[in-house]
Amino acid sequence: MPALRYHYSDTIEDFLGRSSDEIIGKLSKTNPHDTNNETTMSWVEEINILQAALAEYSGRGSVYFEYNIPRMGRRADVIALIDGIVFVMEFKTSEQKFTRAYEVQVWDYALDLKNFQQGSRNRILVPILVAPREKNKNCVFDLSPFEDNVYSPLMSNEGRLKECIDHVVSNLTAT
Image (cartoon, rainbow, N blue to C red; front, side):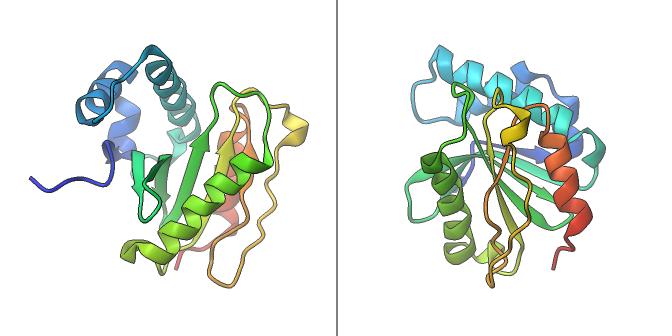
């Protein structure tokens, strides 16, 4: 069996219908590293946040957890493909604030996907940094594209992630 680039994937519709225990079981089974309590609790939080944020997108895409980034040897927490738009999401569940280093991290993931993965070359890529407990006033949803269709990172907390995704989908047309 060929190695997969991700540890869990599903259609958004099926993802919404699964329990966090079922998803974590699949993530743990395919994760080559020891899974500790902190990792498991982060996954639970990410799953709950995403299931709430993606509820209206059933039948419109797919999600990938722990997605291996070409060339970097690192993994994006979540890739969501909605209406042809690639959302690259990095969750900082133990953090309370956005930092420039985390913003650069998620932006690097999007740039590497754009430049080193065939399936992403002709798509719009929108990196989103998610710090679940960050203050609402610090969230940034400005859509600033570059010539390569990779956008500047957006920054959202848990309560505004659905709004962030809605904003992107309603303002961009996937190529």
